[in-house]
Structure formats: C-alpha cells, structure tokens
Amino acid sequence: MGAAFYVNDLDNNINFTQLPNSLDPYTAANPPPGWPLPASVLALLAQRGTFLPRTAFTYLNLGPIRNKGFELSLDHRVNSTLTAFANYSWQAKPTVLDSPTPFPAQELALPPTNRFNLGFNGDGSRFLGSATVNYSDSAFWSDVLSSPFHGFTESYTMVNGSFGMKWSSGRITTLVKVTNLFNKDIQQHVFGDIIKRQGVFEVRFDLK
Image 1 (tube, one colour):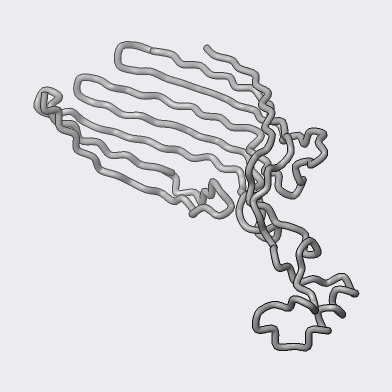
Image 2 (tube, one colour):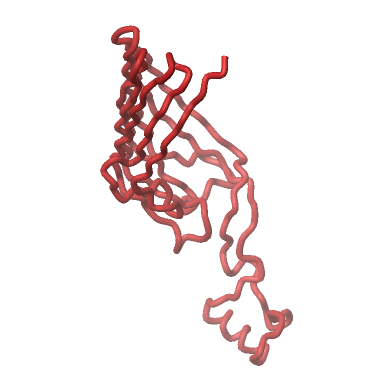
C-alpha cells in the first residue's frame, strides 16, 4: 500500500503567453506592412479602444503557482501468476500565489480533479493477459494558442485489455492488445485526437 501528499510551488515558469492588444499596437506612425487604408484609421480605432497588436504573443517567466493533492495506491500479488493493482489521485485547482508579477488567471490549466486506475496482470506457463480500467475527470486546457481556443475535455472511462499464448515452451509468445475496448469517444487533450478502439497483434521471440 502507498499514500502520498504533495505541495508543489512553481515559479518563473516559461510560458507562451497572449499579450494585451494595447501593449504594442500598430499606430498611425507605424502602420502594418501593406496597410491599405489611411494611417489615420489606426488612430481612430485606438481612440475607440480597438488596437491591432504588433506583438500579440511572447514567452514570459510567469509568477508562482501552487499545486497540491494526494495519491493512494495498492499493489497485490494474488499468486505466482496473477497480480492486481488500484490507485486513486486527487488534485486541487492550482492556486496563484502573491507576486509583483502574478501568474495570469487566463493562463491557468485545470487538471483532472479525480483519477482512478484498476487492473490485473496474469502471466502463466501457457496463457498471459491483462485488463485495466482508467477513469479521469474533465480538465481545462490553456497551453495552446489564445483564450478563444482554450477549453475543457470531458471525463472518460477507458477499458483496455490483452490476451496471449505461449508456444514452443515459451520461446514464442503471441499477444492481442486492445485499447478502448468499448470504442468510446475519448479525448485526453482539447487539441488531441479522438481515441477510438485500437487493436495490435504482437509476436515475441525469446532467442536465449
């Protein structure tokens, strides 16, 4: 059995950050290359609070944030051929710590609050196999592009499994592995691919 509680403080994290449009805008004295309208239009837009940013993004050392949570785990050998495991983790929302240059709230990513994994592995003289169930809460992703593209991924439960046989006194092993057995629509990152069922056939040779 295992248990852990952690508090991690992170400061000066280098992050690709969206800047305010008014920080370094194009002006009537310095219009964008190939600007087709009179330069005075830029001054008029600025008076109305609309700016065309000359520098829209940059890398910044962002202020301190704190992550904390706990983890519980259990590993058990049932017999000489079968092992089982289970683990659970809880993570709080990141906290922005006081700083002259605080971490921008819009840049915070919110990890899954709850995650749970359960499974077993079997490895006998003739047969082998495994099965796992993985659960993850929804998460908010803000590490790509600007705020209009940030977003949540839905919570998901993924079931994986494998089954194999040994041949020629264990010198050859054939194995079928299946990810996302029930073919759910699973997205682990807001810009990630949709994970569907995937099967792999594997052959191992022991040359010893």
